[in-house]
Image (tube, rainbow, N blue to C red; front, side, top):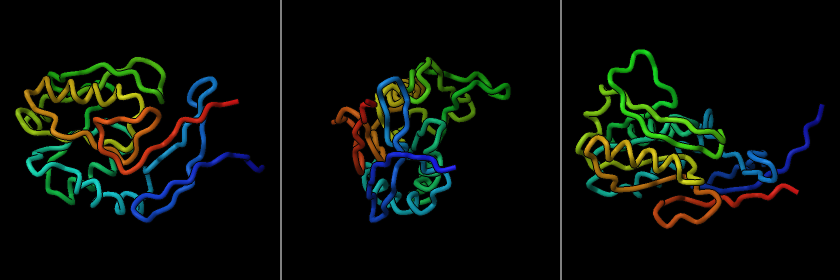
Length: 182
């Protein structure tokens, strides 16, 4: 069986990818950028993402999702610690803090949860928010809220790609348009 798909081509750090256009809402498609399992792209973009970090960055935060390989590789590259707030509260979490979000990919309200045991990595620190794609900014806002709740300061908002409206408050390697669905 042959599946007909439309694609959008990008090039990041010398690596080209054909991104499938997927429907996320009635009348709207996005170019699906999925770095899970794509070691080549993660390794290629990490030095460029690292160069965007302010010199005084002390920690990284990344929302649970497809971009976890990026924050891991960035931590290994820079030596900075990182935390990954989870999309669901786990039974093992000790007095977690949480922040609300409505993501374009899920279309419903969610929370991001950060375990009390993780707080020392970001509490009172200068923190860079790192994500693979920033679209509506709602997940970014949830990460900002979590950092603020710990007494930390957001010193950078960095993504491989932004999507939709241009974001002046985010440093990114590229931008993806939205695709109205006929």
